[in-house]
Length: 223
Image 1 (cartoon, helix red, strand yellow):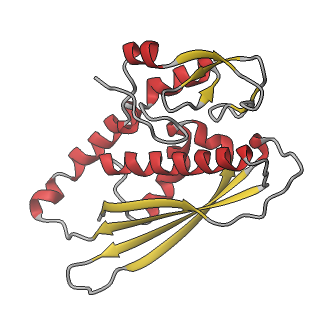
Image 2 (image 1 turned 90 degrees about the horizontal axis):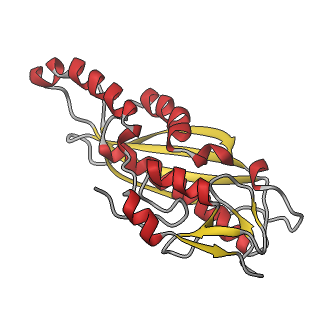
């Protein structure tokens, strides 16, 4: 039986900051999945947990985080072929990269960042008709994976119009949160409408997969 996602939210836990510089690529993410199961006959949900540990660069790609996340959620019976699952992926990516970006902007560093991803799933017994649909759902899951896990890229015209080439000024230097490499002063970077800076090639590749800013979920136009 697979349970559909009805609500989800990701948030960081407190971390111990270091003032010693640590490359973003060395940061580990400790992600706790907290899944609550809702049944019509039960007054309160019951919960199951899984904890994953991976390097920050896994969040660079929806495909990479899916390869880590999907097997664990499948163990918990969660349907990973739905559009709601795409929202979970984006939520975790934005939470992780956004938290690290904010931390680095304040001059803090950490070796390990703990994230919690909470979700509620509906426990619904399968009807005879739903049982007959199981094979079709399995086929649709394969199609879902082949179609970039339901993610929609930004239009090429909007990227050309809205993403500007700018020079990184003093005080704006930092790291591109797609590749986790440095954006130094004087470097020609690409700036999203939300003002976040990235390497040009990095954000162009990202926006072909997803129309969200990887840091703040600013939405670019789609077809």
